Image (cartoon, rainbow, N blue to C red; front, side, top):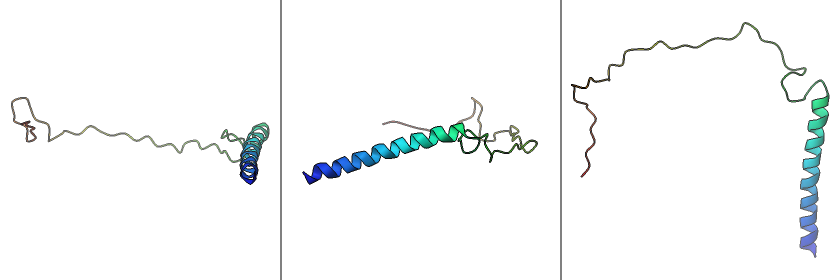
Length: 77
């Protein structure tokens, strides 16, 4: 009997937590701040601060031509 009561309390707590989380999500989406979409009060427009990273191709000294032998080999017995 007391095991069922413990399980009932755990299930009720989990259900109320899920309900509360959904309720807060709905309330937050309807408000102007804290909706989680990135456009609320804390979102600031940062223009001109982006940096593009590019890499210039470098010659690979380790590449071998088809005529040269490779230093890595695999042999199966």
